[in-house]
Amino acid sequence: MKEQLKGGRLKGGIPRAHLDWVRQQRGERGVEEVLSRLPKEVAAEMRQALVTTWCAFGSVILLDRAIGELHGPNAIRELGRWSAQQNLSTVYRMFRRQDIHDFFERSAALHSQFQDFGVEVYERVGDAAGRITHRQYTTFSPTFCESASGYYEKVMQMHGATRAVVDHPHCLGRDAKECVFELRWS
Image (cartoon, rainbow, N blue to C red):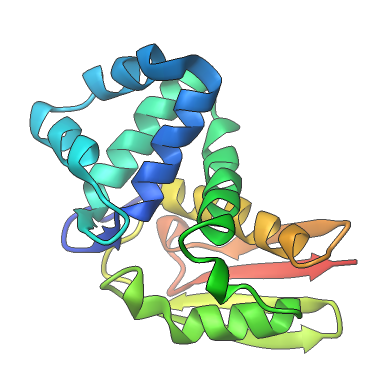
């Protein structure tokens, strides 16, 4: 697997939600344990992150890896699920829609408000299926893709799906030209 961690930024709502997940699991002590595993400047950036501030992509990936070291590899996808639940139930609740397709179409259009690299494209491929493609990503990591998969799963559930499946057949981390996420729900 390969990755490029330098150059991109994400809104602070992502690492804040991930640290809130740790807080739910292990309290403040768990948060401090995770942050102690990071380089000092990265830990400081994560402590100061606000929903509206920008954080370095590489710092968020280091945070997620530290969480994964303590909670296991399945924690990364869970971080994405938690992030969707937290952010779409609070600060970004106005982005929710009646229809899953509508949400993902709007989300792709607003992509640059939440990260400053790449383009997200959403395609309807059936009544209960869609495809998200991350294009022109100069910054990427399989860790980010795993968290994104969890986020997409939870978004579908929050918009009424009883079964939500995300496959990630093409990944920049596996030498693909783009990251592709195939979504199915019922």
